[in-house]
Image (cartoon, rainbow, N blue to C red; front, side):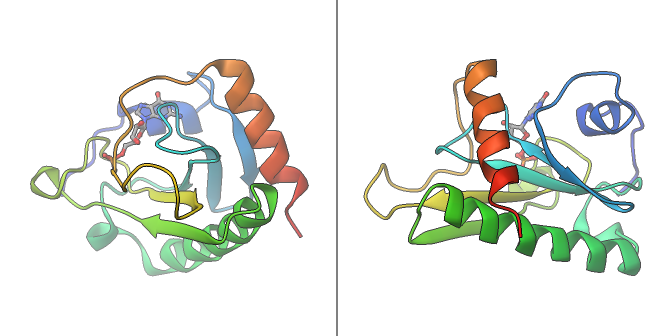
Length: 140
Ligand code: 5GP
């Protein structure tokens, strides 16, 4: 899939628009999803241009999945969640809406609303900040 440099996550990586950062290293970046489907819903992206998993460089894929694991562990601890969902979509036909590869990391308590992939309501900035800090504090 071709890559558009003006997608929203490319802008976040370039610092052109704000995000609630949880963690970053040389190859990956983790931040809060602006429309969470549950408390602690975050996104992990590679710091390279790739629209989907299929076109992602293997070294960046390896680095990104290691960050996904790190964030999933931290989110589970931070929200005292018995489970954590990790997933990603490839292509419009699969439901992808932002065309910079990203993994969703979502703490799940098994009790709240049935699983939906996308949120409908933007969360308050101060809540996202607090949740980013909470997950960051739970990193090992
Ligand atoms: P997709 O449908 O591509 O798997 O998921 C895109 C995700 O990006 C959605 O969950 C949506 O809430 C999130 N999102 C869209 N725009 C922004 C934004 O400007 N900032 C952040 N942090 N998340 C966004």
